[in-house]
Length: 511
Image (tube, rainbow, N blue to C red; front, side, top):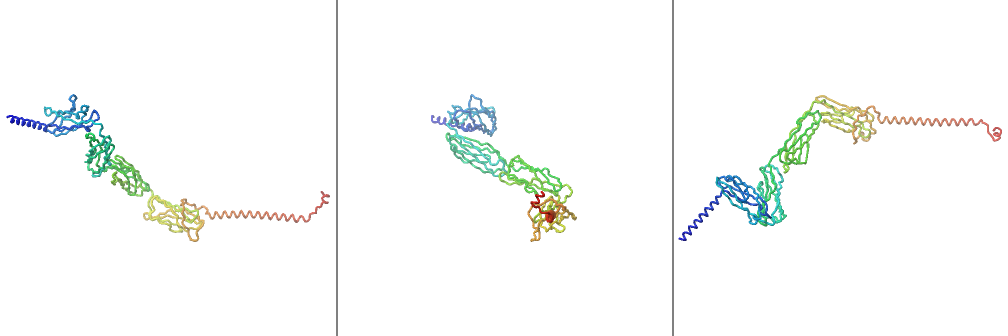
């Protein structure tokens, strides 16, 4: 009997234990409480991380947590079935708790009208040194194209006085987690990570490690940063889109390029068909910035359209090209202005004439320059509007003769011409060995020579003639004076033959 009774008692105890275990397993509220870190130099107020989970199919209401029965508990609130809640709870860690190595916690809650309690605890450790570290993350581009590669640099530095162990750097936005490593005091670890993005995310790097002194867990965070997956968002405006100018005038436009997106661009270049490179700039066009370019067209001779394109490089190195728009130019009706022909004679040298032609306010075809006696001198297939042409033709010109030059062209089946005032050749010498003048390299003279001016040769002849006359007069006067003196001396000689001779006695008699 005693043995049978003992067996029955054992079976009853096992049943009670099993019932208690099942009741514990069926506890509707689960909680995990921990200090991170759990190391303390001395008593202080610390953040306690609390995670609670409603594992039942019933709502939990009026949940509260407390670490001291004598103090008001903190409110958790309502926890829906299957819901998990995370929050931080301020706890005053006392010397008694540090000595005990833990902080006891009580969570009270209601299911229906029934109040229940859950007892749990959080470990604390008093140490002489805390583990310390600093985490930084550098994202090389904050905005990328879909599928573009992004480079991130993570750096963890041990700033404490003890080593840290089992350090792992992770970033959920990049699905990144490093291998575990250790750092001695003042040591650092740098990790470069490359990944691609298909949608925007927020990077929130963190580093978990334990103290080599207490094996207590630590966690440090780097500042969070947004990574945007986007496309180009540039807007363009041309003002005015249409311009009307007089024939041969230049049109002026203003082009504005604005970056409305999140990408950054470098190496900006604007091109225009018929305009060439309008602007090139090595500066950076950042998000929400704009630049304005003033454009001037060449002289307009007819209706024209100028397509504008923008070429640039996105900060990651991707080349982009955009169609900015079109500038349209119309020409107002204006009276025709004919070309101007100027011919000037050179003072000296091998080239007798300098010729300057100012173009009309329109393009002229098959323009011919000629001289009455010398014939055709030069032909222009096209004489551009508002052009300036100067040259020194090699011509055989005679001294002192006047030459008349003429410019002829055809328009709409009619022949037109302009002429220059007669230019008198003022050549001082001719290279007889060659039989013609050679072209000299000198500046062209644009002033028209007046035909009434006296040539150098005639002027020189006049001067020589005047000098000869003066010399003749002087010589004549000299000869005349000498002749007069000679005649006077001869007359005095003839008179002296018949005069009495004066003696000393005579002088005494006739004093």
